[in-house]
Image (cartoon, rainbow, N blue to C red; front, side):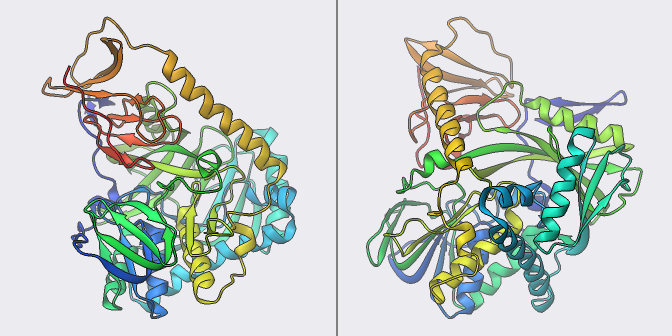
Amino acid sequence: MKIVHAQGKYSLDKQHETPPSYWIDSTPKTNYPSLREDIAVDVAIIGGGMAGISSAYLLTQEGLKVAVLEADHILQGTTGHTTAKLSSQHGLIYDQIIRQRGEEIARLYAEANEFAIDFVAEVVQQEKIDCDFSRQSAYIYTQLEMNTEKLEKELKAARLCGIDAHYETKLALPLDIKGALRFGQQAQFHPRKYLLALAQRITEKGGQIFENSEVIDVRDNDPATLMTHQGCKVTAKYVIMASHFPFHILPGLYVARLYQEREYAVVIKSSEAFPGGIYINAEDPARSLRGLPTSEGERILIVGEKHRTGHGGNLVDHYKNLMDFAQELFTVEEFPYYWSTQDCSTLDDIPYIGQISKDKSNIYMATGFRKWGMTHSTVAAHVIRDLIVKGDSPWKAVYSPSREITLNSVTGFAANSSVLVFDFISGKLIRGKEVYALSPGEAVIANIEGRRVGIYMDSESNIHKVDTTCPHLGCEVQWNDAELSWDCPCHGSRYDVDGNPLEGPTLKPLERIDL
């Protein structure tokens, strides 16, 4: 799919694949080796995103022998498709945490995320990393009168937690608002420029990074044993699972305690200068804005339109909605970039960071960052570093995957389980089409000899057929016309038109059909 400009209007051509994000396009591709032999390390880290690289950076500083194992290339997943805000302003989170878990947990949550911003700033300065880091004020605004009371409650909660929070009635953006909260001393940066520099420091300190080295099994012995798809074995005292949605079926029913969402981004070249600041609204559909310094001048990044992965139809409309929103606010000269991303969330909106269970003390996880992975990846690295090196962390109670279940978590578990059951059953009951016609760029789920088959016609009229049953846990995938992919509505696995995995937790491809 690509954005086409003709006769003064912007439209979308669905026959082309989505181009790379700005973060990926503006930085060099990595070329770390694949693991080709058995190794033994102190810490094996599964996943080369921000959580994995940040963890490896801290642990190599401690003198530990560390290996990062990435299934593809590092920093090309969610980290390479982020909004790249460094903020402790995570929606209306502080009033929620106080109500659900108490003021002390909320204060520690704020402390951890404020610390993360300052830590990145410190590393940028100490390591002399050119990554477009800049301090910004963060705003959450509402255009609905009914939400002003929520903002006032959040203001009180944020101040109780020690955050520099202020109430505003106007924004520098051309938006008519009813109210806004401003958090001071937040930040933005270029995540790949920052993390590629950390990756280099990791290897300089003796750490190892392996790309195209997918881990397919973890055996929780002491030490633990990891197996890669090439058949290599990694023996490690400690394992950190930083692979977004855990691919391994873990104790703790995490497959029902996590869910994944898609979100969309467009970059615009505007005639107007961006006023500074980072912004998000308090209502749906989500609208997030920030400035984007590039080699060709400043652009504006607009993100929003979240929905559960594998749900909804005509997903290309999400890009159109963001384009319309951009043109309402600014004089748009060009849409040079657009992309989508996938975020993993927990049932109580607080990530799972720490030991996966009390009886598996050498295996750690970092997942469920929601939309706020830049600070929480940094928090995760510190929490897990402290647990490994010191045996404790000041933020352990906030993020522990084994934390006490709240009423909200119970309700969320029941609701999420209901969605999973509905998606599984409905996918099995809905038969494919018996009669269909395709044009280039289109797909259909067809019934061929009693089998549910996903069929896609590419721009050159070649046909691609796959079995629509997700090999992860057996749900039926749905077509994503915005990204030209087959997406699983149950746990968020995604596949390209030939069935190759794009996003986990799946480890296996869809079956290709030659009927």
